[in-house]
Image 1 (cartoon, rainbow, N blue to C red):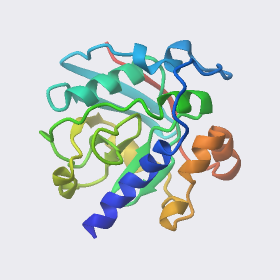
Image 2 (spheres, one colour):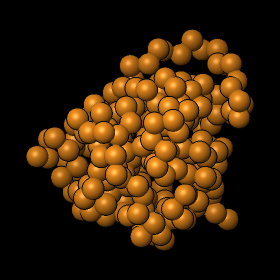
Image 3 (spheres, rainbow, N blue to C red):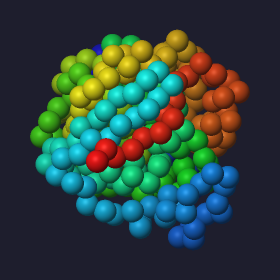
Image 4 (tube, helix red, strand yellow):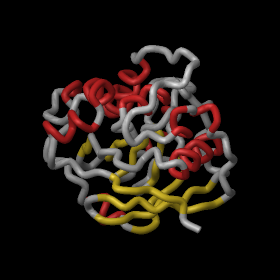
Length: 224
């Protein structure tokens, strides 16, 4: 059973890795895209030792507290993504009851493509996957990019598989618990939820048309 759960986490990231390799040129800017988000290599700011990020969602607000010493590479990437608006408009596309909720595919396909291969190096697992902890999805060593999951319960079996938590929900976990999961798992895992490959190809337009009840992030910001 544990192996099945780990495979579930890896699947969507593997699909992201299957996208075409970037050319080194800035992709054309789509509607609503931000120039900074089109150039992942430029977003390398070091995160504060400790900071909080507030997510305003269609279900309410929750706050993630990040401790950089838990997972420095993951914390720095998260800080840059939130600070530059990457998660604004992102949909919680996958909810597995009693396991986790996953998100982090940008609804703008141009931005999504720019980040598809912007991998960060692995961090050691210093803090594990307890309820409320926030962790990156990945597809093997050194493949973390932008996709995250929040643990609904203690998933400590993931610790030995190399999934380090970098932060935790300190306010609004009740909001996270209410994120809509009525579609079930993603289609690639024999569920009725969205197909990550189609999100990568079509963006939020695909989700809005076919999965209108999914919850999403309105805005995410670093708190002062």
